[in-house]
Image (cartoon, rainbow, N blue to C red; front, side, top):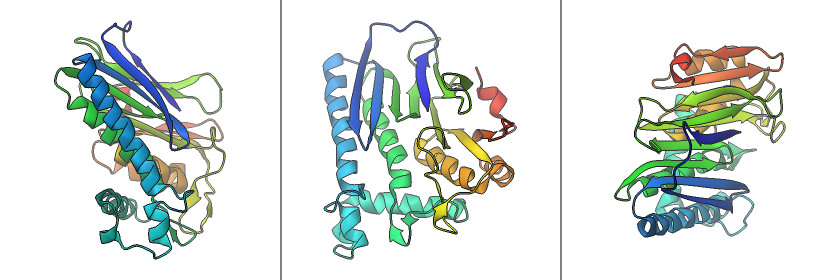
Length: 267
């Protein structure tokens, strides 16, 4: 779980909104732009989240992904977002050498990529509004940041300490970059929900949390899930091999492991 804050006191020139969708809360913080135009874009972004939920929810019998899994539809017969997400999920599976999978117990289930993809897409809808200088979209603790809240100010993300409720394991700064995303996978909030694709059962790992930092939430969300299933040693080595990615891994024994460039993102 992560919370987004501005480096200094918040200014009045902000549009904020919280939306319950996909079984979690998406929080929006948009800085700059003409307020009516921002609110119109916000309505579009929120509608996009609900559309993604309707298309991809495996809990809805009538979702296109559920119908696709049952063989009632083909990919070309689905909305174009379905083909887009399945292509992204296939790429995530390739890059992670199978540790990220768009399947669960043999059935199609790309939900592991959908939330990050949907939150990033929503953020980009808002960033496209004329005059908008900064956007933060926080989807259940996974955050996409674009721009900055103010000149000379930066977005910062507090990463919760999974072993010390209410405490922070780190603070990630978006200084020096126009795009930053932070995603965490672990057991603190939802228990043992991450699956080892090789066995189809809950991942057996020495980790309690993996936080991954990079430009795009679509990818860092997938990489956090994959690295958690790998375990601390293999996960850290793999994350070190990825371009533009840094990470913080916390083991059940309270050992903290970091990629080599993470220090530049702390603060």
